[in-house]
Image (cartoon, rainbow, N blue to C red; front, top):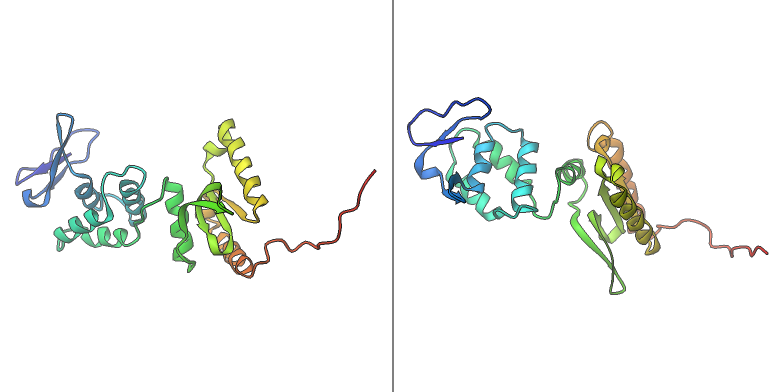
Length: 221
């Protein structure tokens, strides 16, 4: 909960009190309840979140929630310059990108980029010969490499599981690689995962997706 002005921050069990100056807070309403606007909330969260958690929050605000824009976040961060934790907010803002649709996708992007890979296309529509094939979480279109972040939902929900399998087969049909990433790939196995993606980008950029021999298939009767 946010207190605007000089009064002490509210202390109520189950909440975190925060105090800000009036000229730094833009108050909006959710129904009849006055709340601080999303962009200002992003800066305030810097007092409690890590940089990575703040990037995830920023991606949500400018992405699937669509509650503000990157420019609005940038303006609020500038307005708070010199304030506590604003350096963390500025560092997180530098890595916020529109297009991510889940915390897992954000973590995956950060793992790839921070280890030297190019920024992937987010929620990329694969279109081949004018035909839409699939939408994938992250993609390197020039190398025809797609990456999907698989949460436990992808395993436990039969409908999602079947949809994932169909997507993978459709991508295979148009000569794309689909790499599935899990929580381990953005955690303890991140270095190995990035090495694999780097190798696929090098191979795919050279046009060598399918290295199998092209001998005629034998006919069985």
